[in-house]
Length: 318
Image (cartoon, rainbow, N blue to C red; front, side):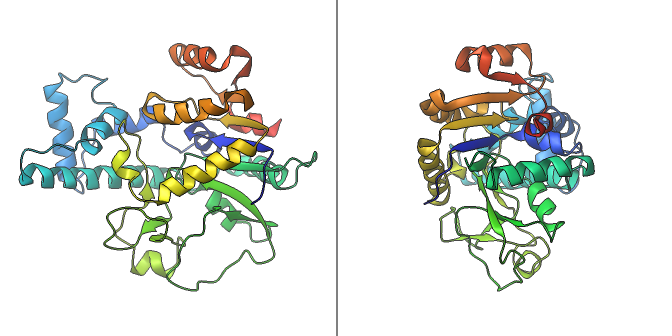
């Protein structure tokens, strides 16, 4: 098992920094509140009714609140309500996937060089302390950047071994791995058809333009954990348990941990409790323009000296 002296933990602020089109949580909330889409009729009706019932409360119609209401419900009065919520859950997760993936297709061209240098510094650090990158993001910004650079001497390595339906052409032979552990899933990971939970042996990596994406998973929703207060149903099975256990092992062996673009949102209280076990190793929590209340909470948790108010791309370029 490789050891990594440094670990970088990336949040949504990192993706927003490297792609100007990446929607923010606030942007997704506003879009969902005014959404009108015939592709998701039950979801649209639910949102309209929720707005009326709550007297258009902004707090109760936020993205996190809607996700929690729909995805966290596990008590149903009859089979009709159960079925209705299954439809709502499917439509909400599909809506999230569509909005995020369609909005942010690629890394901004002027950010590519900084990211290449960051990757190179993780794999071949000048001081010899190799770095592991852990992320809560499920977008494919880095995957597409790697695909656009066939001569780049590194290949993206998810750390866990994923399945493949076909022996599709591999372009990473002879390249050095850049370890990239995605704790909340990825937009190119899919469960095998008919699977109810994610187990380590039934999650498949699908190339964006590969056979499996076009033939098998063309209507499927990728494996990812939405931003809800209750995530239990999405963490069932062995797959995410394996990912988090790998993360724990690497964090135990690391010397320093830096969070970039991750402000420990209230929906991730379990994550916060997990990372507080390694509090003494945390070097920086890099955030940009957080609200005063959130800034104060982070400073109280980690100490003012560890909080860096800086854009993610600026930080990795230093």
